[in-house]
Length: 208
Ligand code: TZP
Ligand code: MG
Image (tube, rainbow, N blue to C red; front, top):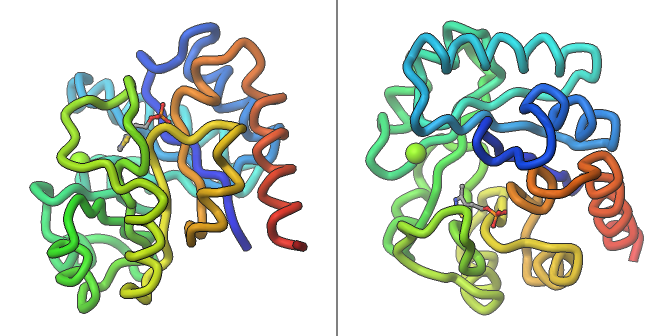
């Protein structure tokens, strides 16, 4: 099943609080949520993580913590998303409970190849398109890059970066298993409606 994956922090939420965005996205049908707090203190990060965990529990939606295995453990999140300079995935696996979700960002073909033998649940193809949400990126994979990764990698692929209603279908066609979004959900007045629109595209693609 293809999923919609919301990646967010308090500062990405333009029209509503983080809690409201999460609530609306959950009601709209989002399949997974990542808390990505780059500037929060450890204590704030944990507080927000616990809040999201409580909000997501009734929906059975997994919570993923960006970068920080300690925070994931503290809030009993379902997993972590790691970058290339974060804790190595093997170490994260050792610390986290069995069956935790571990995702890894890949920003070069070398990293994709290296990841083939790593115990990850998905690769974050980062970024597929240029985006204002994250500007310190190394590469823009584009649809061709995503297609190439699809051909050489056995891992589940989560596409992130610049995904919108207008390009979502082609990103799926290029080989993404899941679509990860920040601004298309957090930056819009109606996150529930936006989520439902993406879910519709994903469902139509799945049956096509
Ligand atoms: N990692 C790669 S691109 C990105 C992250 C966290 C931001 C994606 O944001 P948007 O607004 O969906 O383009
Ligand atoms: Mg990171």
